[in-house]
Image (cartoon, rainbow, N blue to C red; front, side):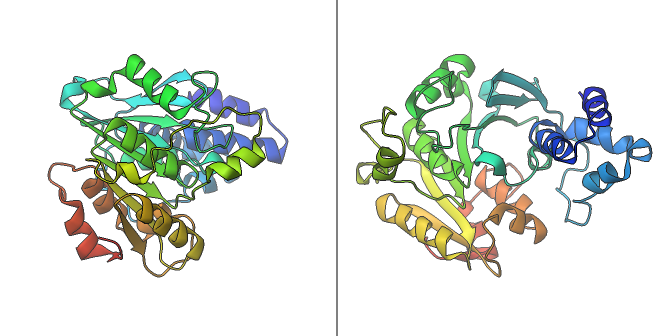
Length: 303
């Protein structure tokens, strides 16, 4: 993978195309592949050195050894990251709904490094139609419910010890909906912004829309724990989190001191992302109670 990436990069003279290659690598490389790239730093061109080193001033994830994830693409827009060790019933599965061009709000390899590859498999999904996954991930599936049914058939997520959903920006509402449909233990939205059905009717008049929205008052008694995370000074993200909380019993979590849309990166800069993810995913040895973390670390405005 790294040899192929560097060969393509060396043969590319267009600055815009080189930028796209770096974006592609950010969304595809695993922690092991990133470590291999960093090991080649003395031989890299200056612009790649600067790109590789851009996160070195951030507080690092707790695990120093690169996590052993291997990537497997099911189809365009759907990739499984797994260490290939352990059985599903001994691991948890995280469904991660990317936010369009924003991806996971940070490079995939950096996000995965926060997660123990012996305990978690991660499924990263991208919606190229930019419809909050309401139209699925085509051609694999044409609806969110069809997408989840296909993934259960192919991966058997019901066989895992636990299922979690998280979504970023545009993927936030999809994660909440997927959590409700699958009965996931927890569904977390980072800066999610809702698009109401009337908007999709107007902008996509030819698209077949689902008759049922899982984010409705009928789901208030679901067993899934809903959490919306946003930066305290971002009024748009805050308003959307409040709308979600009016529909389902979602806890709202405000990251203080920022108006950024990228709450995940703000947590990373503050050295709080590892603790948040440990709590969010009930990691053994971490803060297993999400409520404790909310109370102790951040401004919890909607417990």
